[in-house]
Length: 285
Image (cartoon, rainbow, N blue to C red; front, side):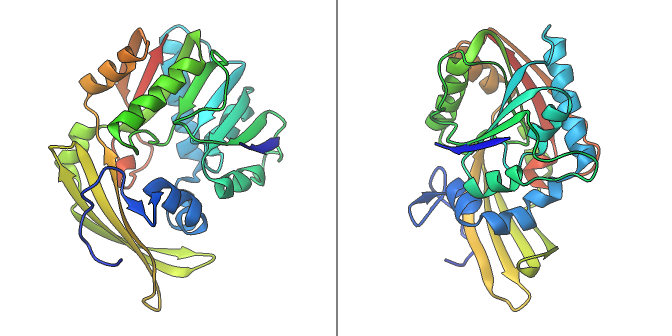
């Protein structure tokens, strides 16, 4: 493996991509508070059954459009590497990219009781999907799994797809999953709370306030994490763009994808929030 780097309250945000102290919410949560978010949120999905199921579905989606998953795959927003490792265990060469150096460090140290670490088929790179550090047509296969699309402004989300199209081979395939917005907005809970026992912070109470903003087609969420003494560890808003199937097809067509297939994802277990109802999308050049 190689690793390289290139206020309290429940008021919802009014701006696109909530910011905290000048940072986009993704940077604030996943970089500045990487350990906290890993232990209370990301670690929930460190589930071999779920990961294997998601990669199974990605492989089936790729095969359904006439491609064979083999060779090298770019795993975008790879986080702590759960999908990257699963791809590698299935014989693929993997390049994993993520904005969080802390999460990439976890991926680099990742261990599995039944599998060796480090894995020689994986390279990890710190980078931003809005400006990918790769040459034109560098990859034949690109994945973005774990509901990692829609976190930025509409223009920036479109730029991410444009960048993916730029670095994808002319006969390449892009597979990703995201929230099935029509199902989600009919069933989301305006408020929920859970408790998580963490290694670093002890028992953490996680509270979530949600508000659907139909005019912007964004789900706004405020998260507050509090420890057993009542100390607030994190309190900030974020929002995620919820795309209709028609909007997705139009976005992908606008950047050069000629074919788009969309199918529901059957979950192996009940999941929280935006991870609960998802669809799998596969687009080809």
